Image: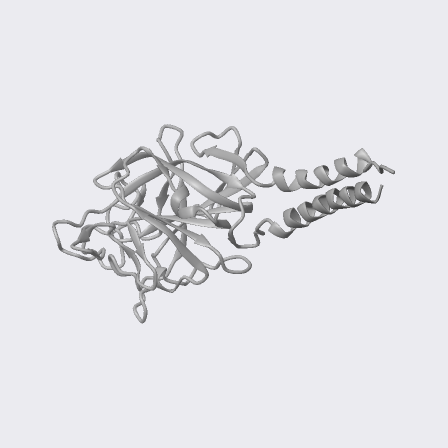
Length: 301
């Protein structure tokens, strides 16, 4: 006797695979200069702590800014080009005539570059950008779900265009305020990128296997446990921000667009969840089991 496996049962097994396949990879991108899909929160009275919020392809992201303008250890002020300065919220700077987002930090002022506790020329060109001159600026991307960041474009750069990318793989929501770049916890270095200019930068080789709800992009280079550096090298070593070497250049960048995927799997953090490979394996086992049952029933007939 020949027993047929009901088509509905086979179809059910195939349909069980559909959610897994659908969640495997959904591409998304954001033009951060458009204001059609954005809203702005004001932050405090000076705009520090503000954010711009975007939605596209079912993905949401909030963009905010930080800089190391807090006190430097026992000092009551921040110090130029020092990784001992504590992080504080900054103002994410946007102008519709610009070619990307910049950062205004809290230390603008002073009359010379040696003015204690001030970031001279901050908020003036070129320090209306994400820069590492005297203070090290960074931009935090906070997604509504875990994603893999695959591309970054800066629409404007000058002098030098080194940058770094970190992904948060710790638990819960990351804390930046009152920490230093050297003492950040739960973050992994995705990569340091040198002299990229205004081209679209492909991060996929370094970000593959990492999913996170939080990504940090900063000017210069980054060394885990040390913090931000100039992004420039002498021999095989990165030059610190306070280096007097002629090879050291400050970096100035405006962030224009980002792109990536959701549901790509891999190491996750910040409330994100990686796809469960077991679900695909179990579905496959179930399907093979049905095939085996059909063969046994054929043999019995």
